[in-house]
Length: 261
Length: 150
Image (cartoon, rainbow over all chains, first blue to last red; front, top):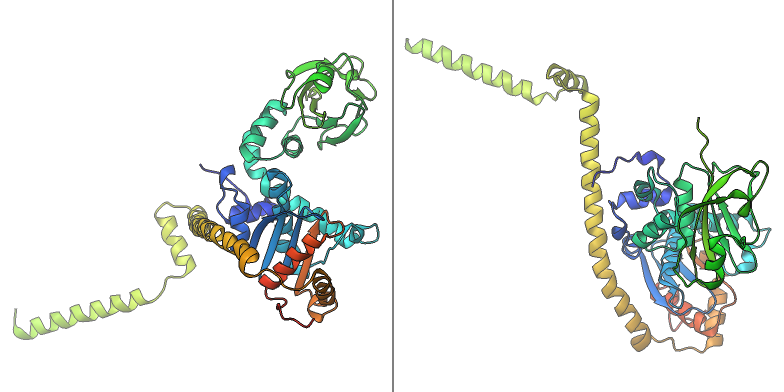
């Protein structure tokens, strides 16, 4: 496989993968990379955290909570690897509990956010994901394919795919009572927002209340006002597809029509 | 050809060889190489990039091999470490002693100088079981000894 990569444009997480010659998703072995960087990974139950990093200047041990899902464990390894790779250079930060992430501790919060970004780029590296999304519309079908190939959660993959798509795309998770979170990609108009509950005329409504985990709707046109709040949407259709998640949630992808230049 | 002529010819050949040898010893400059490439109809920038990519690819391949080897080794190490944790190196002090030793660590100069770090992802209060495994990690890393007075 030939990939033309401008290394200067890669994020720190991607650079690490590129350094190890990673060219396909199945080669992303975070435990092996961690081991090569001097970190031992243990999988064992933790009551008070998703993961823990204990590190000296030359070696460290990451313990990941074996009670969490495999996908979450991978993300946690990537997160702690991020601390090891990034924070070690500037003097490690000692994080103990959530109280350390209180409002006043901006350095720790920034470090946590950076470690999360680092991890996201390790498990869903844009330089590999983009080859799967190129010239394709963001749909649940595409997200499920990528999530399956990269062994990642549907939600995290939805965000990555939306980020890499050029068309205005919104990813949203609804519970049966209300919307729980939203992600708008960079070309989505900031003044257009999703509704708070799924419209009863939408096929996604049936999915939300009667579907089983993994079931999905067709990728189809629906009136924009079923899904969005904003001006000038009366005559607009959007394309929508949803999939049922665990805990009676659905993940929906909404795409605005691209205006001709 | 007379004998002196033969002698003179041999000398000339030797001189020519010595001259060539000396010339070969002089390393060509970057400009010389660039000019040679241009003379051969090549683009020096393209050739340079090709060599850089080739070298980078070799380095990546070497690291990848190392990663795969570490993967095999690490699997053995982890299982050994875990078995060791349970069977051979089970921490002996009571939970209160472990807590106090760990707490004492946070006041040591090493902790201040960031040569020791403990970071949690989504951390809340730590159970006794968490403290035991943390203590074990500190033992494994040689940060504390089992007979530590800390």
